[in-house]
Length: 173
Image (cartoon, rainbow, N blue to C red):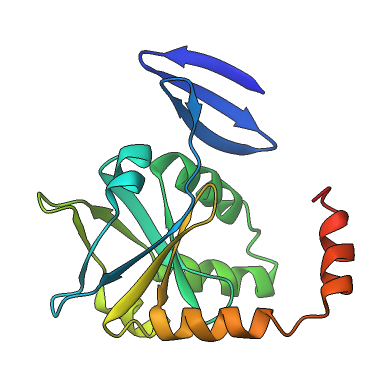
């Protein structure tokens, strides 16, 4: 870890990923919360996540087309944005990704009721209907249509357990 104390926060950089350490605890966006998206496209962001990353979020599409949305803190978004911005115009495949992801991104502020407004284009992209799974992924959050989330988890159980364990061992898990 490399760290620097800034007020009540400590900036911690580990493996190229920025995390905030608040009151001695490394930010870990973990857990699953279920909320509903209202008719105006608003969803309650769990208080735990708001406490960890603040009142400003960046939301974009995932690389798995149409599966879910990704929600980043400003610090994580800056790291992601730097990588996307470094894509060379001569790399047509990567430029296609850059155009798609940046045109499907938005800055979201939390309102007084703890909700964020998800743009219609992103709601349609991820197929968010009513019930939404808000899933912590360590340094970012995923928003899934609840039924897609259930389907995804059912699919994952069909993976051969031995191959799964072998694959994860390459990450030291």
